[in-house]
Length: 470
Image (tube, rainbow, N blue to C red):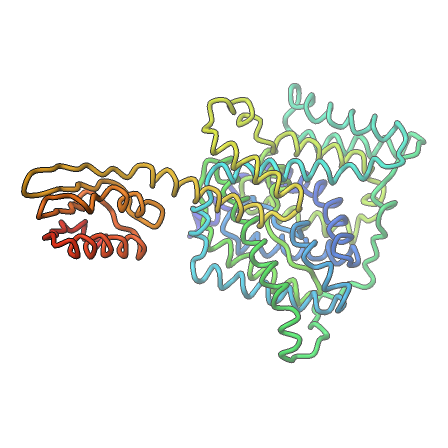
């Protein structure tokens, strides 16, 4: 037990602390943006991010994965907040947490294994594109200084590690740009310019002010279910990606229970639901974060910036933060897949492209995943059906049909077409010993074949398939 605690919390202290501080730089503009999307006070999003980060550090199933408020979930809240008010959002957040906790209890994390690599690649590339698009709004009506600072920030991020690696280069780049804003006059846009950080309205415990009636439940239940499903999809896909980046395995069901606890408690502090974020998680891991301490430090640093160091927070230039997010876009996008696209199966590439287009055009990650998975299932079904092989051996007394492959609703008609019902042989043997019968449609097709042959006056023998098929 002590060894596990040391491994998860204290085996990488220096790198985890620096990674957590660096991650906050990406969290700040995103938290503010997600609040604007949902139509709530920016402090609600920031408080939610702090709450979720602290709780997921202790209860999550994947160390170093960053969970906070999310744009994919914020868009699902907009209509309810506009129609019923923010108190219903708090209630929906609590219900979302309960649903996600039950997802973990009933081990629904295993379903993520049904998501193929082409869909995961589409998910990664979609997020990179969406992050890039989200940063463009900061360039509207800005002077050349904005573009110059973004460019210099990116140069520093990539050049500094060639000479100095003790401190993450994004952290040094943002610190340098902040000092530039302080000492060099210019038309710099800062965090304080885009949102007023007011901590006076914060409540650390809040029971949603809604009627405790069935009517309220029917209002919040559809939103909570949508939030839970989107949170499930984005969290577990991000978890799969971070597992690959760190060459490790983590418990998806424990992660869902942790997300459930985090969102439930966050609802009771007047917050909005959240999930894992690939951008912030990628930053955390790429700059050295590996343990739970990295996400806890990110939460504490965000807490200090908002409640103690708000003067510093307000002068951080947006251009520097945009530079960090553009670095994330570059790092997250799967360039290797693009370089090797000619060697990839055409069907996989098509699924990846369609998944990406759906996600980017709708901003709905769950919808893109569902469509990608369904397309993959159809491709697999088509290929499995094409592999059904029916060999016929004919003699004067018997016709033998040897069936090999997968027999299911797609391929059953192929078998039916191969049977010669006008055959003159008095006996027919249907050999299914090398076939796998998957579903009721295949069984009905076999019954139909036997019945039609019997009606022709033939003696039918069926060699049973495997015990599993039977």
